[in-house]
Length: 102
Image (cartoon, rainbow, N blue to C red):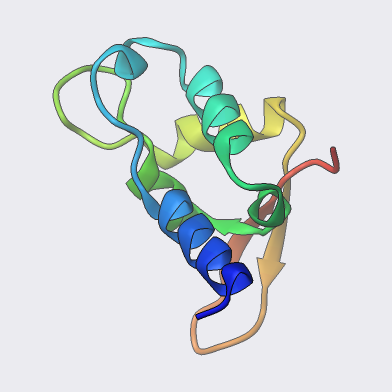
């Protein structure tokens, strides 16, 4: 495995890790999204995301162990400049979220 392959693999693993509970749960959901996105490797920052991915990554508003709600995430993404698009490929049509150009 080359160095670039190892770097890509590490970036993919880092992007798929959920945000750890604790102090982060007490923060505003917008701050959580901003910090998660900033922590991603440059290669992965511009990748579109599905709502399913984001729900799995973000803890909910309270410390009850529940996941964040799609409506709350959607409001935060819009306030951060993300754009919502529709994917017409595959058997399921789904919404994807495209991050703002940095």
